Structure formats: C-alpha cells, structure tokens
Image 1 (cartoon, rainbow, N blue to C red):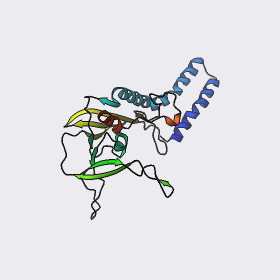
Image 2 (image 1 turned 180 degrees about the vertical axis):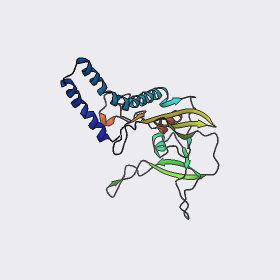
Image 3 (image 1 turned 30 degrees about the horizontal axis):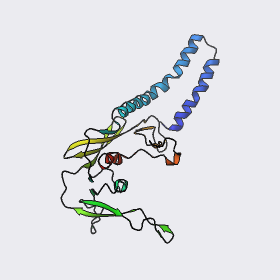
Image 4 (image 1 turned 60 degrees about the horizontal axis):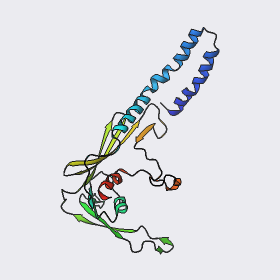
Length: 242
C-alpha cells in the first residue's frame, strides 16, 4: 500500500470516531462500531508487529560478534571474495598487521575482465605524511603496495561472508575461520515490512544498530567524538590483531 493512502486512512479514524460518538444509537451499538473501527487496521498491520518481534528475538540471540573459539594473535589475514575489505584493516591495525591478502582489483589489460588471483597488501609509513604540497595535505600516513600471491597458505585466518534470505529479510554473516574451523562470526539482520511502501524505502529494522555512542573510557565526551560501532571486519580483526 502507498504511504499516502496508508496515512490518509489513518487520518480518517478520528473523524469516524467522532461520527460514531455523536450518532444517535444505543450504548451497545456505539461500543460495537467503535471496536469494529480498529479491526481493518489491526488485520492489515498485525504482521508488522510479528516481524518486529521476530527481528528482536533473532537480534538478541545471534546478532553482533560471537566468539566460538578464542583465536591466537597473528599479523596477517586473508579476505575471501565477497567479504568486506578496504585499506581500513591496514590503517586500523598498523604496525601490528603486516599482510592482508585479498582478491586483486586489477583487470586484464586486453579484455578488461577482472583478474582472479590474490595479492598480498602491505603498508609502510609515508615519509611525507603531514607535509603540504601546493597548499594541499598529503594523503594519509601510510603508503600501500601489493604483490601477487601464487600459493595460498592454508594456515592463515580468513574472513568470509555469507548472505542468506530469511522470512521478511536478510541475514549477513562475516566469519573468521582457519582450515575450515570457525573461530568467530559477526551477524547482521535486516527485516522489512511491505505493508506500506515509501517512494524509495520500506519500514526497516536492522541490528546491530549503527548509531554513535560515547567512548567507554570517556562517557562525557562531546558528541562529535562519539564513534560508530566497529564494522564486522574491524570487530573480527580486533580478535587477532589487538
């Protein structure tokens, strides 16, 4: 149902309530019609509350970071295709982290097709960090480079991603594993209700919630210093790099 029609019908309820209250009828009839007034809306939107309840139940049981086996500290990780990877891992955990292996973003110079080999990404301190060039600051404190990986080490921790459809939503798991053994996972749930449709969205629930909160060691910090919760890759990475 269009959101315009939905809220129009909601807005008509007070009008109908007043008309029934003023109508010349017995008390029993008035109570019956007032009760009947809420039946269509209740039947139409009951699944909204059912989906919300299911979302809250799954979030409480499974959402967020779950550590199954405490992993040992290491200095490298492999990011499997589809799992979230950017230079954040190297930036966040440098110099503790030495290598991040990930599928290359390079393409075949002749065909333009994506290449399918892994590369080992590393970082070093940028000697020009903090300097200015033509009135503009240099980019970042780290310099990044990569080399092709010809053989994958089976004893390296891996980040992988699994997405699945569930009733009225999706479940996304980012998994930390090694040699096929799962050490930890970060789970996100997204549910939606299709009973009302906005021009570009639906009523949606998501967990874990990506909202700012004060630092643990500074509860009275100003709002601009509040961080967002760590991403799935950062939460899992902290288990082996911190």
